[in-house]
Length: 269
Image 1 (cartoon, helix red, strand yellow):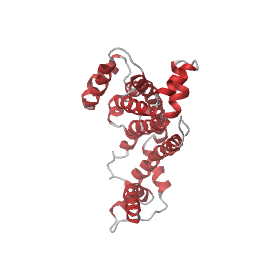
Image 2: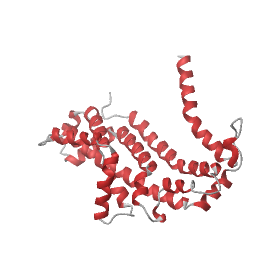
Image 3: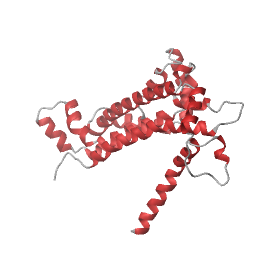
Image 4: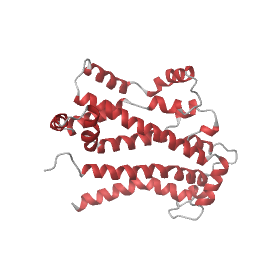
């Protein structure tokens, strides 16, 4: 077992080293990235580098835009995908298998193929350069429905639903009071993945957003690369480090709920 723990520790070190290297570069001057041998110690230039990033871009405004868009999309995806997954897992209705097959079929369509038709739809709705163009197309996705359907099928026992119906509960009350406490781990996992994917999305916001006041954080970071004086890696890494903190916060919060959901259950032995 000792060698297994050693491998786990080694894997943790390898996984966290890029983040540590980003922090090292962010706390040193612009030439630290070219230093030979590579620097591995932190310095005191973090706030100075970050101040230069604030001068070059509307960082906090872009950060707030990303928080709003990513948070709205995450809540929407978790809500609608959980409802759809619950319906596919626990209800019988006409064309159920066909509809679920169509949902799965959309997973095989490359994302790039949907960019042009989605842009045309957003233009017809006059949503270009608005947050609606970022939020509405992403409010539900096939992976989320598939993920929740698979989890609910195994986690929510039919006996619990029947007990709720005997007690006089309606469909939504059964879902809210019986299913949701059991499937919290799956909802937390879907929330983490959705928030990260939306937060890191660069291409679609770049396509539909024109006004700098609506830029998301990824576009704001990209602006730091447009310079004639050479790339200031300390400034770039300082801004990147600050943009990563909300992701870490969301992960820590949802991870706590994830662990709490694993240690609780609907049926007590």
